[in-house]
Length: 219
Image (cartoon, rainbow, N blue to C red; front, side):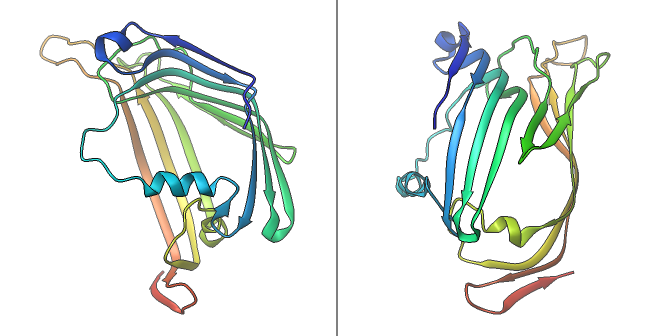
């Protein structure tokens, strides 16, 4: 994993809240080389195993607020050795307005978006903003039709104690990023929100134990 440049604009809120608060974060020229060794085992699986082996904590989750997140000019090289194929995800550009679990505020300049070329073919997902909405809501739609679940389960980065012999996934989801809204008359102030709405459908589904016949079916 290499990165050409990382630019972060830290906020004074980091000191006040004793937590990372960034008004902007840009990662440029990230290159990742990933090798799938076998089903659910990758070149980074040893790192995942060490993280999962750590004892759990009962304390509160880490607090953070990251705004205007951008990934530009990045590449992922994927070597799928079990099937003898290589894939290239290039020219990656990602825009995320914010990821936060702190009640902080910052000017949002980045629109939700994703662009990349998969083996040369473009993938372009653009978001939109409702300029006259009081929260200047930005959103992005994710639609999948007939996605074959077993094909992608094999790429899970963690081992699973079950198999999925068959199943298809259909989604029509909208991810909305709502900016904070100040208090107005009888309405209290509202913090930033990330909302997921829409529908998700799984059909012709079967769940089984390893090396066993399906034990759960759904149509």
